Length: 171
Image 1: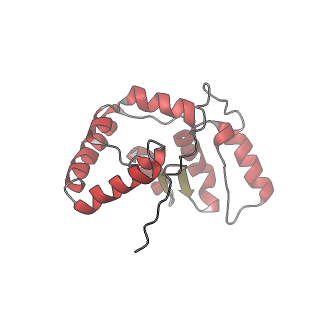
Image 2 (image 1 turned 30 degrees about the vertical axis):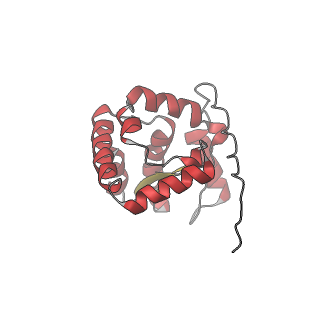
Image 3 (image 1 turned 45 degrees about the horizontal axis):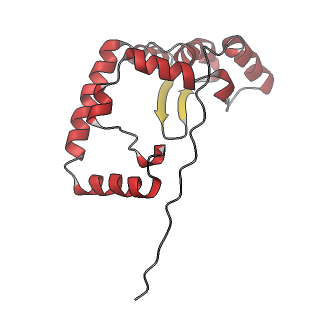
């Protein structure tokens, strides 16, 4: 949320996140001298995200509007169709941005349930880089993430997409 970003920015750092079909990431950039102030915020974002209803509603509305504009673009429709033909019903055959229907069904409960089943300590990699010793990095990792326990059962891994048969026509 913007509250977390502002807390980190007030200390001269930055906090960002992103996701794709196969990965999700939360990134913290901070001066080493400010890590004691920024890392606790980062840990809270990773371990106990808020999923504020007003923010979810705002983002849902923005994404539905953006998607409705994009779906008027022939290139967008062609890319979605090609992905569905090549990858079928696997995750890769669906747009990362969803559809207006799937976006309308997202709420705090569904997002939290997805988080609980997919964002687990055993599926997480914590990386430190820059002006920090390995000993200090391990100590910070243990301090802020060492007691992180799985909240529930992990979701099963998605099956690999089926490969559509290829046919060639030579003229």
